[in-house]
Length: 112
Length: 113
Image (cartoon, rainbow over all chains, first blue to last red; front, side):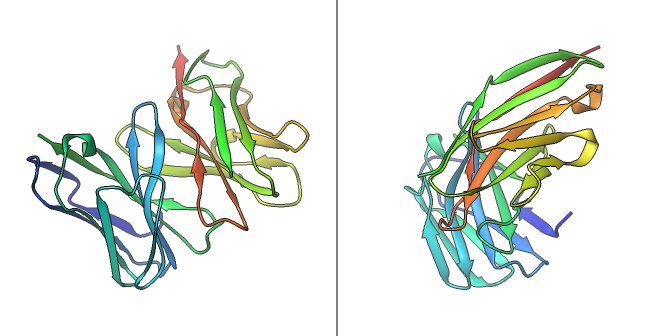
């Protein structure tokens, strides 16, 4: 498995609080992605990064921001969490934009 | 724009029977196609991928898929289902002119003993 870790693995928070999820890789892949997985929707792209400080929006970016100050770390921030952001969040990495994506173990976030 | 359609959100097969999971894609340029598997409470793992060349692609755990351009399909098959194949399966497409993957909504495979 590619060296990808996500932290925390589980989090319960309250509506209106800020939340930051971390994705860390040891593989030096250029591309990093954040997805959310919800029943009936499969995986939906939130944001992705194609290099340090280079990021772009995905399909469902509203309410989320990201940062990548180092190659190995990609942070996803919910500035003010809402119940609709309760989901399982996956980080993925790849060498190129068309190459295989390798996934982390996921973070289960519950917003009460 | 690219898109992926997986026909059948739930598929049940008997142990030892053929597994067929359907995937159709929409793309205006030659696509790269992928199948991933997700076991409960885990991330996605690559089963197989098609980029160029041979249209029949073999993956791990006895799975294979055939790229059919005329049918815009990339169906996943396995001759004989095993109990350990029970999982969620995702088809995905990317293109060289784009910058994103597009995943289908997934097919949950149940294997009946």
